[in-house]
Length: 344
Image (cartoon, rainbow, N blue to C red):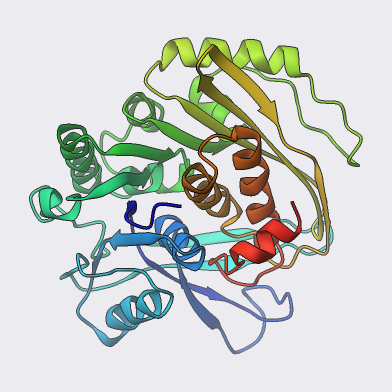
């Protein structure tokens, strides 16, 4: 891998509160806290895999905000471009799934330092100098109009400087609350500006309003309807021709602690486009599924540099990284390159 290939991720750092031992949010006296957030998760995973990665956000100049930066720096993430300002860090409360009970997420992000980010605050020409990829997600566009505008400012500078754009759909319907918010149109605009992207199957279907074959695997012998998926991706690519790599994660939750996970990669080759499928991984013993999509994206960004001529290996590596994230508590995927390769 080219160690000079630097990746920049941009988004909101969050403080996550949850209860231990599968307690509900209404039970017990103590919360445990961890830092996270989609783009920060990607940055930590990339750093753990040995990549040069810079993270950009805005945080309050409080002990809580500075501790978040210290945590990322401990993980090897370059935080020199983090801005300090505003009054509070965004938070969320997480109740894990148990048995037939679904997981629950409650956001508390209104008026956070990151949501009050304005265009012109971040010196994007300096941030992106020497970078190969800028990674953004739909969450940053969802939290406020000014954050959306700052995101498109970053995309404009990336295009001007010839930096590739990686995009994660990351549709969170409960976040789009500001006046004039139009999630489908906005995320479609972001998709039209990206070179490679990730989303789960539900997000793909919602954003593109195209029905696809359901993934209902209950074991690893499930037959994927590849002809139908190929036609589906061809139509999708015709609508968004700039994107050259489409990674779609697919998960069926058989139980709260047992998930079937796979992925498809539609990508450009010298002879046109091809559709690849990954194995189906049966994860029996899920510990924490938070950040699984971020692990997919980090796995893809790492593997396209590590294995530039092997798209199937890129896909399988991304799936293996995401599979291991299910076994790690918290938002960050701390799986190493050796561990990921060991389960390929």
